Length: 186
Image (cartoon, rainbow, N blue to C red; front, top):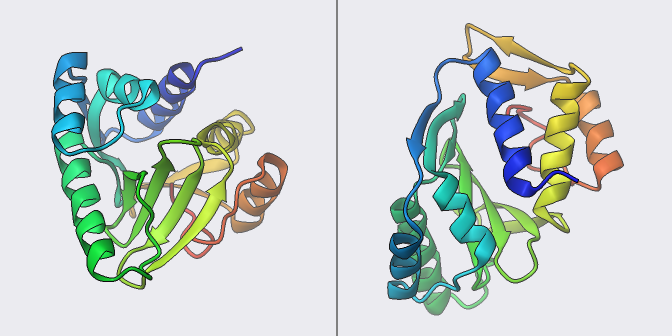
């Protein structure tokens, strides 16, 4: 069975085969990751450490889609934590770590305790569970590539998938497509 890092490598290889714009940063050393997370009072999980050992962010992963470098993700996390302390009804919860952003409008978070994925519009305070675990999302994205459901729009600089195909994959892999259905670019 493929590990999460194997799946991430496959997703990245598929993206790079279609799009030469991503800028992949090298990973960090474990000690650096742990020290930065502990300094920010963010739970240190094996998965989060492994993610940032793999790569410390990927710019231009797709049009308007970025995998945050660790320092920026920590800054975003701290900002949400501070805002939550001022506005208790704000939808973000402690432990929802921002991993990816789409145009700075939609954020994708991983719950550090459960591995659940949430999509959120922080300006509107709207956060919704996207999947019970991040593997569901990775499996859906890999299936889109494997089934050749994606295409590259050179003018827009984006890997795209047809709305109905993404909806079907979402249903099959138990991934909510609510925040991605209006602009199916991942």
